[in-house]
Length: 214
Image (cartoon, rainbow, N blue to C red; front, side, top):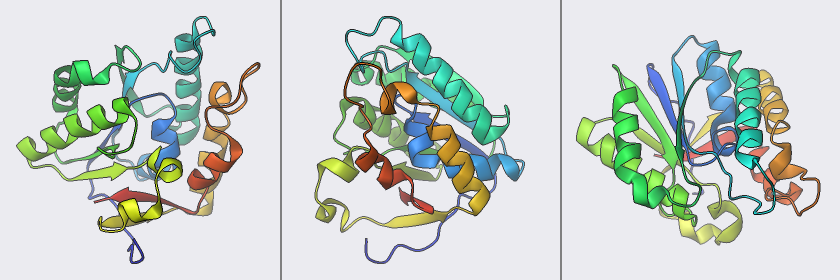
């Protein structure tokens, strides 16, 4: 990981597979903003509604869907297409065939798949990552994987031998991503519980670049 050159997707559709509302913004919010600004089609496949985040929060899935829409509106000016699968939070591994079908259906011409790292340390992330890798192999599509949980659950040596690329953000993209992340109050500022994404974790996703395994 010491040598991590600049990277960007090839022109075409960007298909971002997000296990829970907020993963797409944490990992690729700046990329989404820039891709829309360049006039390219951008699709977010939202695998679950993230309803298992807090067991005592009624209708949390509705809150998180609203947060997702608000964040993507900031990042993409209403132009990001959301495909909601509504797979039960925590059960993505039981629905990998459905995830694969959704990804295949979203592919229309040159596309790049952006998906979770398949060894990220969360079952939904890993299942979604494996499903995306399977589709990428069968269709011959480029794929870039993003770590989320890995940043704060594993030593840096875990990623030492993996090829990576940095997508650098300009100031407009940094500002848009910071504003979009503020939409996920249920994860960063919950009313009566510890945040799932505390400030020290947010720091990993507040850098002037986004890192992908390529």
